[in-house]
Image (cartoon, rainbow over all chains, first blue to last red; front, side):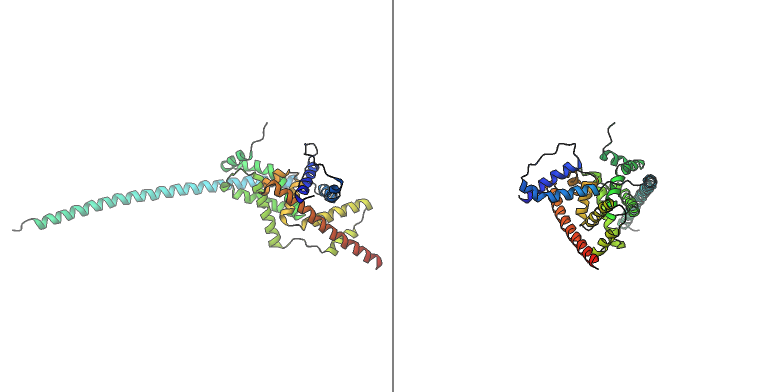
Length: 127
Length: 194
């Protein structure tokens, strides 16, 4: 009996253990094979018997749920504030850049006009 | 009425905090069970379950739905939380073979009941000693009663890999149990003679 076949047999057995109502593919095994996997079947059955689901206390579930919702609200408020701060910051930066570019353009024009006036003055005949 | 899908709830939870509560209600039992069987006591299970959900909430905005079940994300967080807990506090119970055997020998109560309880405790102790991935597999299979396909999704492996891991886990568990039981018999023999 190769390892892969044992994998399949054990898997089918476990599926059957956890859900007996569902149609689980049956795997026919010989007596010799059964002898090999029987101790593992028994162990799986013991595990199923010992590992029963537990219930958290209702009080714990309720209070943690409330705490989480409160925390989620706080988190969302912080995120909104942060987002608003980013938007305001970006707008302020944009305004500053606009003002700076207007000032820059004015300075550029003034400098050009002055340079032109100076050039004209140099070219004009004296006396 | 059909239950809303995880994807729908996740999308809503990113905009509306109340919705995270619905995801929490859907999974709190499973995560609690997983942590309970990894730590062995209710107090730590409550503490670590809370940590798991707080961490999930914190990273909710960055969660990307890649088609894997949301439970896989939660189990991964729970797995890390439990691993940190074991590492940081060094509270992992390491019980020597003799201590374990003596503990089970000392029990009172009706013989058959006590014996059955002893066997169960012994089995769970040995399960606790398995590597985390194997413990996770057993918890998902027997406590959560998940099918192999579902376990494969949660653990991010193929179904074939899960079947093979299950086989190896049972074999390892049986060997470990045999060792413990042999130790117990030896000790019983010694105390019987002494």
